[in-house]
Image (cartoon, rainbow, N blue to C red; front, side, top):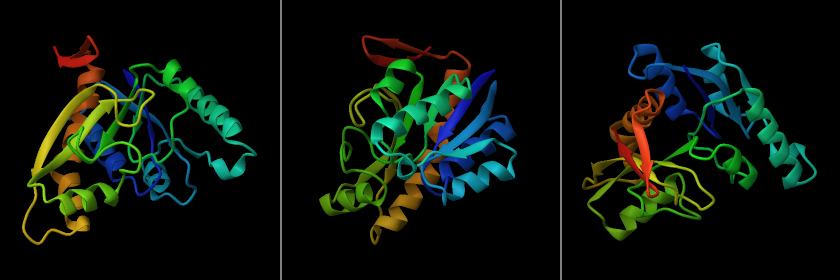
Length: 207
């Protein structure tokens, strides 16, 4: 049984997609053992509580330094004895020590087709604003492993979504969530839970 901890900063729509997929059996052999947020007002914490999932807030504001926060975050993660950490809209730079400790056991969902519209500064609505400004016709989402860079880890899955005339960043964000993020993130977790992925020369392949 894959023990998953989800880290999230906001509303937790991707968290809900994971919860629903575990409940429906779309994700198999998996248990969500904890939810961690850096934001005490994150609705994601309420979502976790409603489903009986242990949840905790670790905020940088409660620590004298980023180093102390990083240590507390890693300690909290370790207490859950997780097999996989899922970043589902977690707007915190993951400490290098955590990346080392959980090498190839941290995944992230990013709302673009990496390598487009990714890296430092590209998150949330900013991704969709940039895509519309550029005039691209296809956007999407990417699930990838987390390494020391920003959105640079090995790509696990991607799904494309078409841009439509009249799209606003908010409308496009919602479509990418519904047609890509909420689909491929559960799929990726299920593949990992059932040992269906392998990494060869830094690239991920489905067995």
